[in-house]
Image 1 (cartoon, helix red, strand yellow):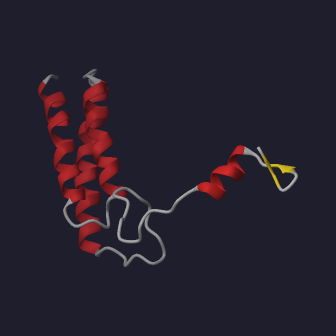
Image 2: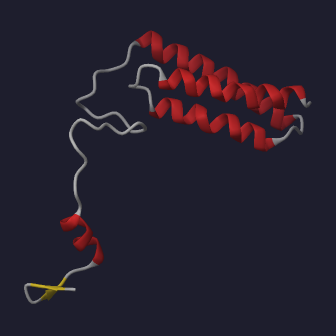
Image 3: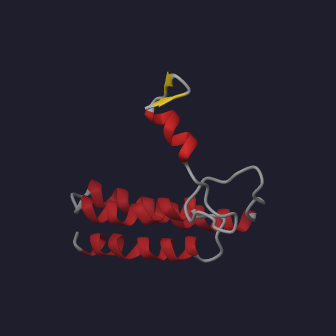
Length: 109
């Protein structure tokens, strides 16, 4: 593609033709920005402790020869919960969704 007599790469073309999302739409999973208020210490502590318990359960399952796919199925929503930390209920729903696969894997041992 030629613009103004010079060649434009695909990346430059994508950058100039991109449309931004409306300001009222927030992405669900994102890293916090400097503008975000910090989450409460209790919230982070509770999520970290719950995540640690699930992590130890996953280690026990894999170390004892259990199904690693169930551990991965429980780890994915757990990681997503930390990316959704600034949402009100979504992290807790994701962390609750992470427990059943790990409990199932523990029961299969």
